[in-house]
Length: 184
Image 1 (tube, rainbow, N blue to C red):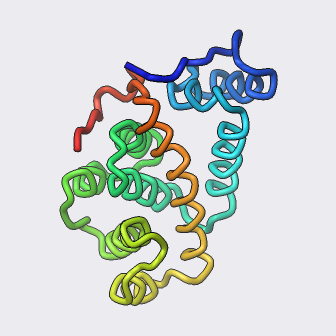
Image 2: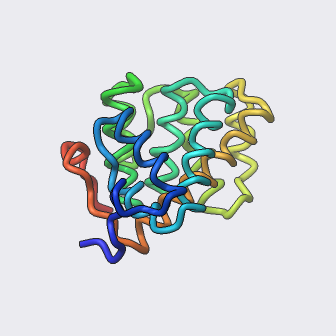
């Protein structure tokens, strides 16, 4: 059970209402993550703005984006985001299930480029912005550039917003994501 009120379009702050309405229009629902974040419009706006620019400007294609977001959520132990990004990866971003399952199970991804990306993102999180030389060399050997490395930082920042508020608020998992429920 959430320790935060799950805001609705009707009772949210005026600055949060358009963001919640946009989520409902685009997804057919307001995810519980957004309902929790709407308790403070600055958090909701920061998260949704970071997500939008990450999706459009990071230099990663959809599969890479979900590998990053899922890997970061896993490293942070966020049960809500691991389930949500597994669902999104499987159903919207065409990530092969063997890739999402490998990440979720802590196993090697059967694609060297995605493996290097995942390991780099997890190292950035685990070592608080000081990834190991080994994973830095591996990501660069797979053709990723400084632009991509900076994009990983964007993803880590964005997921830190969502992972931490989910931990603090004990955000309930939406029914839509139940099929990919995950426990640490």
